[in-house]
Length: 367
Image (cartoon, rainbow, N blue to C red; front, side, top):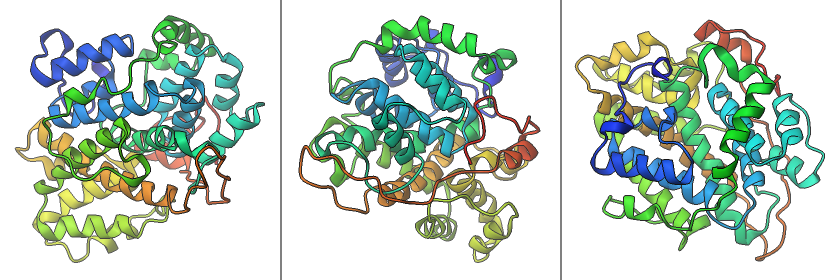
């Protein structure tokens, strides 16, 4: 676990107090473990941690949509965003639901036999309305947007290995890990249980796709907590990031740096490193390097780094939400059609160049 963290020293569960301790306690209760690297890496910023957990819990864990179906969405988004850490985690969690064939089919780049799972997987890697009842849209869209956010912070702040020595590459290890977690995964926690953790945080309006639901409240809290990280940038830098992301079409940027240089051309030299890091986290988090972090960080704390990365991640997540919900939903209870759309992918070879890893990911290339 210690080797998972690239740039921050996390708060350990044993010594955690206050909001962080409360989040870890609920993690242990609802997810079956407190030591989850993707949450621990956010722990220097208690507000971002709590809001991230709240959105994940209320959309993925709680609610009425089948957990297996929502895990398909989480895995599909993680594959599309090329987040190996999250891909390994959600392959294991699909094993935990008991559907071992489904987990390994998706991990190998195949199409699920169940048409509904196949539609959900395709939707998760595309943009547009989804193939689910409108009454459950807040759960499915919430799950998708949770992992647009989580994938970005995980890619930027964690190594790619879920387990030591790349053990997550083993089908047997994934299956055994799923069995270990099966009890927690098959329990559905009560809706709204995480909201007390974020009740005192600043929050703006809930998104229209989830208004009046715990998912909507959790999303509003995350949007505010993560968005506040933009205060670490000057006005010109912040505007450059938001402007570039607002023009994003959901795909991955070119492999050269011309897109970055162009987006940041008007940013003062002293503000450019922070804007570059935030924009990388937003649109190409797998390209964040030690040099990118060092160029901005200086005397900045772990909390500052988490908050800046969260700002980039939530800016992109907001844009992803716009792309996903652009087509109006049909009447309640109907199934929304899958819109033909561009698949969101990134070259595995590019990640290998930036991280020095094997270009052949164990789950197969879905591009």
